[in-house]
Image (cartoon, rainbow, N blue to C red):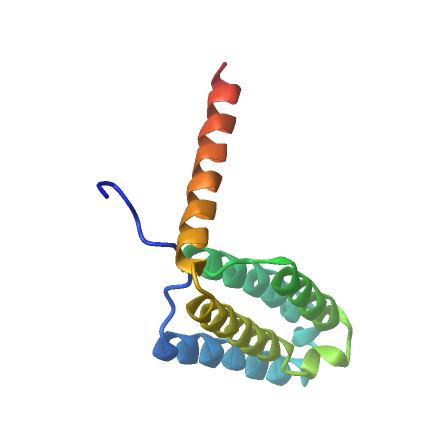
Length: 140
């Protein structure tokens, strides 16, 4: 069929997941070191805000489906990172590991279910049509 696009989904390779987790682990280590000094009380709050925004944007750009469980895990990591004492735990790394495991599980499930590729393609097409319809309504 002409104009047919493959189902969209995560485009993150194992190597890229490793880099992603390494970056999150580095952020956790930097925050742990900063907690040893007074500057960590203030600096870690800004690091957490930036990490949460950048992490979410990166996953969205790379095609990871940000469903409710991933959003709630992100919110939980962010809230616990704001609690003094708990912010020394590697919560960003844990959240990144959960993102990776859930994404890989979603891929594996979609590869095993018969017709999942077609259903995903139709769902993506329906979403694009809905977005176009919403844009048309805004312009009218």
